[in-house]
Image 1 (cartoon, rainbow, N blue to C red):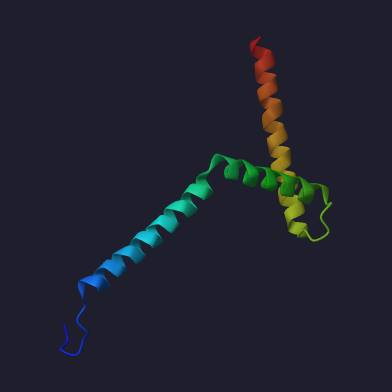
Image 2 (image 1 turned 120 degrees about the vertical axis):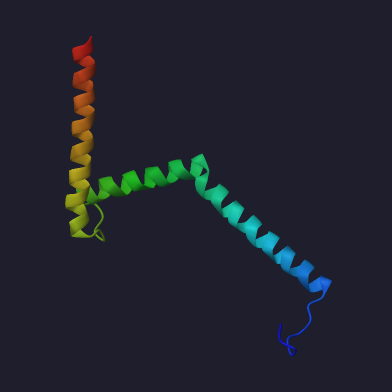
Length: 92
């Protein structure tokens, strides 16, 4: 340590520990909110809704390149569902 550096007191260290604990608590709360199943469902619904709006073209602010990507994703999903239905019918 430099001779000119201020000497830290126990109070300084305790304050730093309290700040660290508050930061850690805030981070844990943010992670818990992000990983909450209700939040995950809401984000999935919004993403699916945005995908459909992009594919249909009902959102005038949407990027045209998103329209093709959305249509490909929805077509792939429909094909997967059709394949699963055909497989289920065949197994009967």
